[in-house]
Image (cartoon, rainbow, N blue to C red; front, side):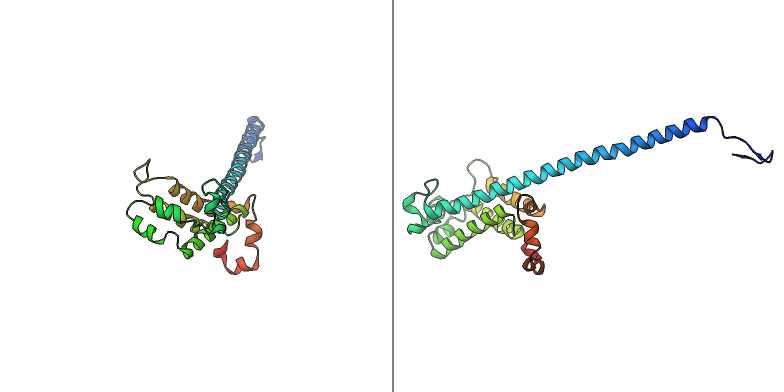
Length: 205
């Protein structure tokens, strides 16, 4: 530092180097903490992406299996004699016999209708395929949420809860998957978004 009274320079205090070393050590320590935090955050984000992708694929298989079982009568929820390919109705059993609650009359009236059967099967196939491939997640989420909520209204009140059941949970999870871009991991979401069709129509992502 400069001593104005004596008009000549004086050496810096002997404690300056020690203080400088302390500042450097503190700076190195502070710089190291964010690096550790970032590494943990990065691992967590990666794990979350893979978990969401697994949930997406699982739900996709649920929808696609329902389609295949009703189409071929694979014997799980649909007997072979009731297969859609053999003239059976995929909605007659659920809407015609199982529907309860305030909307039961409506669902009983449309059960077994050919147009309703076709729309129901197309919905199962479309949602299942989109979720498995990770494409059209917004459309799949909206269609899936509407479908599961409608299924919820067909069985009111739920047998094990005053109002909540797995159909509402499925609807919420489907919307969450679309919002978080779950189709980009283990899926074709990025490639789908880069196609000219989707670039012109972003709602198809």
